[in-house]
Image 1 (cartoon, rainbow, N blue to C red):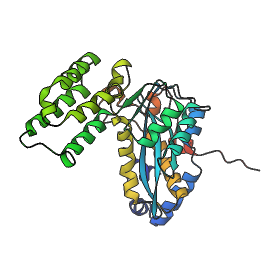
Image 2 (image 1 turned 180 degrees about the horizontal axis):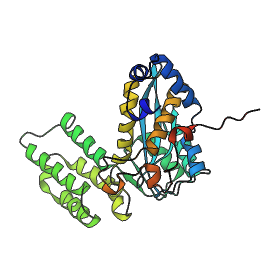
Image 3 (image 1 turned 180 degrees about the vertical axis):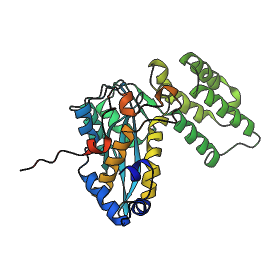
Image 4 (image 1 turned 90 degrees about the vertical axis):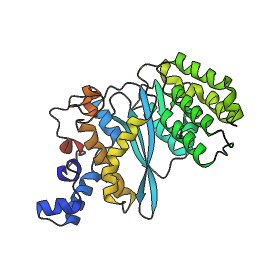
Length: 307
């Protein structure tokens, strides 16, 4: 377990180190994974103390000849995994069930705000279940989508490319403004700028205006991130192991492995966090859980009742 999850070794490398076949190493890990506690079970047992700012994202997993989606909810302050499940996809129904699990007992996440990358199925579920909870759209995703649209779909008027570049520069100032007043100032300047209208950018200016509240809500709620970078970082850490597996044979095998991977992540101490005070602490520790005397591998296993 330690070789496979903590040192990022492959099953082949684990087998070579322990003088066993790779398929034997795989069988041992999957057996432990099948008996591994879910994130929900861990929460019930350890009772983390979360910030209330929830990040939500999905990650495509190759399973059999198709794919499924690892749905993840993470706490913004501690970067702890609040909930995770392996679902058939990311439509509104799947996200609705997932969010219900988070906001209802036994998790009962103290929801103060939500940050996502703008997935339509997810937005639909949020509007249905928690329409009054402050919502922040990831500004980085919004900016990237806008740049992609201008680069590949927008019909540029001849001679106005400098105006388009200037427009993107003003958009960046709106999205990454230090406070709401500065963001409003650049938005208003954008609206009144005749050059943007002459360049045929009026519809895109209107989109900024329409989305402005969702893109700047973080200014009104201290502690709310403006991007979904945190949860994408979690997915990247997972992907380093998931991609190594090159897909899973079945849903059960995938979920068994992912439960252990999430368990390892929650107990592993940060060493490269941009927030210096996070380094040397695990996500669970940042959520107020005392983990010093907990062996994550032993803890991961459900108690097997003997007759």
